[in-house]
Length: 67
Image 1 (cartoon, rainbow, N blue to C red):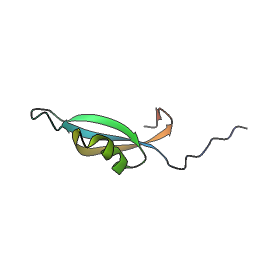
Image 2: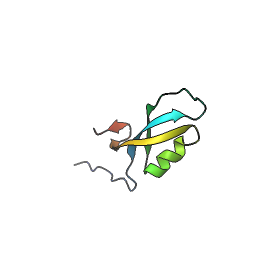
Image 3: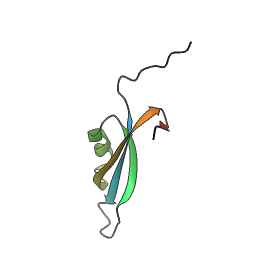
Image 4: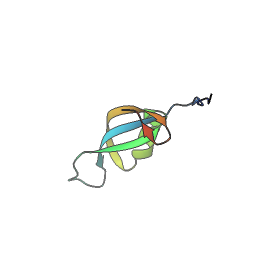
């Protein structure tokens, strides 16, 4: 029987409504990023976007999202 390795740091897909900082006329659009926590996800996007949290979805394994 095969064993499934347990992740020591579970990953999530974070969804934010985002507006580009450089575009005054931009409309909010959904942006997705994979990270271990919301703080890490925001760090990846905060330099380019103004963010509003929308969702946290568990990642089952690399590239597969459980919805």
